[in-house]
Image (tube, rainbow, N blue to C red; front, side, top):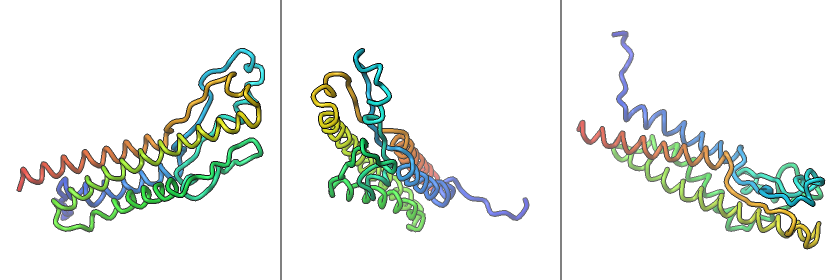
Amino acid sequence: MNGMPRFSFHQWVTWLINPVGFVAAVLAFLLLPCASVSVTEWSPMVLRDKSMFQAVTDDSVTGGNIAFRDGPPHQSAHRPQYNWPVALRMGTIVTVLVMAAGAGTGLVRPAERRLRRAAQVASVAGVFLVLAVLSAAARMEENTNVILVNVFGSRGEEDFQYAAGPEAGFWVSLSGLALIFAINLFALRTLRRRG
């Protein structure tokens, strides 16, 4: 028609969707909060001092914080310094590297292998992501308990309940990896059916 080359679906997937998807997953993990700890239940005696307790207990971290810092960027006297274990830091760095390597799967030849490798990298990165974020959340919950006992004595444990868990950065990254996995499997299936 106008002399522009036509690209097949698997070419769009391997040359555009995969690199952009993997880079977006890495950025979401590194820049958005991926784990947090917050109060889930307040006792009536604490409600009047709620803002003081929230300042100590509500916190979130990004994948970048876990990999490269000991505490959140807004560190204060009442904020925890997590002292992330070396294994958790290394696991987080490996997670980032595996996701980043996924962006390079477009260089693998032939097309069928490219699609298969991208799906494999997405699944491995998803497992590493889940392990890193759940480990970080458990560490945050453990540190919050220590801080509450140190700052408020035993009163901290009795007057409210808190929980740690995944945040938006985790869910965005994991959803992106799942989408990359599904699109690559679909493209692989259509390529095999066509060929």
